Every structure is written in structure tokens, then in C-alpha cells.
Image 1: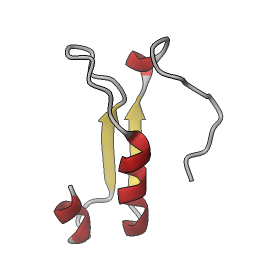
Image 2 (image 1 turned 180 degrees about the vertical axis):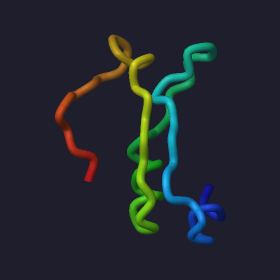
Image 3 (image 1 turned 90 degrees about the vertical axis):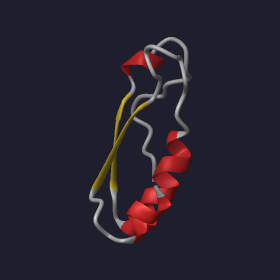
Image 4 (image 1 turned 180 degrees about the horizontal axis):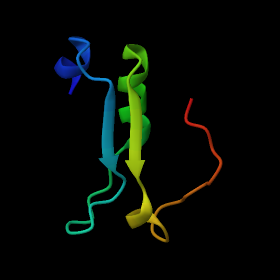
Length: 62
């Protein structure tokens, strides 16, 4: 991902918080930290994590 962000061709990164088949949990804080310096927006589908991950609605990820 670092190479893709570095070339400036990525404007949005989208990731599911939790994979519904494997249960793998993405580190969204790290994803956001990698994307932020390049001005890349981050989108997430967090519905699979509801009830299993600590969700804090209204929290800003800046």
C-alpha cells in the first residue's frame, strides 16, 4: 500500500473493519495514519465489527 500511496494515484482507500468470513480485523488507525500524509480519504464498512470490536460512534479519526 505504501508504494501505491506514494505515487499519488490513490484518492480513496476502502477497507472492511472485520472480514465476515475469516474474522480478520483491520488496523484502521494504521491505515488512516498511512493515508493521511498523502491526503487520501479512508472509508470503512464497520458493520461486521459491531458487537465484537469497541465501537465509539462519533469519534473522529484525525
